[in-house]
Amino acid sequence: MSGHYFDPKLKIFALNSNKPLAEKIANDVGVELGKLSVDQFSDGEIRINIEESIRGDHVYIIQSTSSPVNDNIMEMLIMIDALKRASAKTVNLVIPYYGYARQDRKARSREPITAKLVANMITAAGADRILTLDLHASQIQGFFDMPVDHLLGASLLANHFLDCGLEGEGVVVVSPDHGGVTRARKLAEFLKSPIAIIDKRRPKANVAEVMNIIGSVEGKTCILIDDMIDTAGTITLAAKALEEAGATEVYACCTHPVLSGPAIERIQNSGIKQLIVTDSIYLPEDKKIDKIIGISVSALMADAIKRIHENKSVSPLFERKFKESRK
Image 1 (cartoon, rainbow, N blue to C red):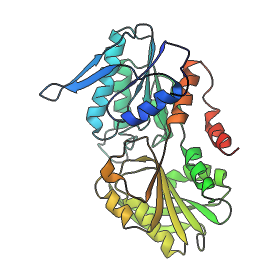
Image 2: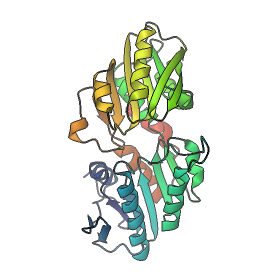
Image 3: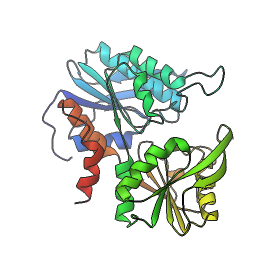
Image 4: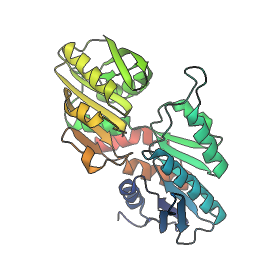
């Protein structure tokens, strides 16, 4: 453990979605994970038992709402209720990956806005604060009537590429769609590189049709960046389009490796040299291939938890992580 944290009123509990990350975060903060049992009744109902007193404590629950999404959301909601009834002073949700975030508006008639529905359920359960990472759309912060600390993973991804010597004019950071331009520009600023945008039309969900490339990529090393990679259709088609446009090498990176369905096979068979991902979502052994390189968000999230607990500003973390690691 990296030193014992001084305040016994700070407690961190891990639910089932990503225990390895939770253990790293607790270690970086300097506390032991709280004692907790999470299991199910025989009909599948979730049962939670908090095995230590948390009366008057500031509790942080670490839970990504990744697959199985609905189980993980219910675990989180039941845990909030258990903590409130056990007289926790504050209940703070650390959600490295916020599921249902793609349904953040009505794109067509009679669609739900599920990102808002989940926010309503979290609010109704009684949470006091959210700490999250790279929301699919940053306006989701406004779906909550509570403080939301929204961390960004671009600096962590930038550190990896800088360590590999991938920076400057010979590198182009590429957004696979118009919606990710701000994210691509942030990474490009760290790498001091230009950006390009892939203009694509999506005929239906999880099917991407690449159209054309805005920007010059010929003879350059390209780095594709997205917030999440689900079925990997978009990113692998984008990589193919970049190769056809004369890119010498194509790397890809994302904060949230959802990697469902045919994703691993598509990445393995694509021209992508490396895919850099964070551990915001637990990656099981059958999804670990040589092309996928993992970096951890634990130190970033641990720093944020300590700053929130000490009533300090979280904003220095947007730049500091990057600068510290480049000394």
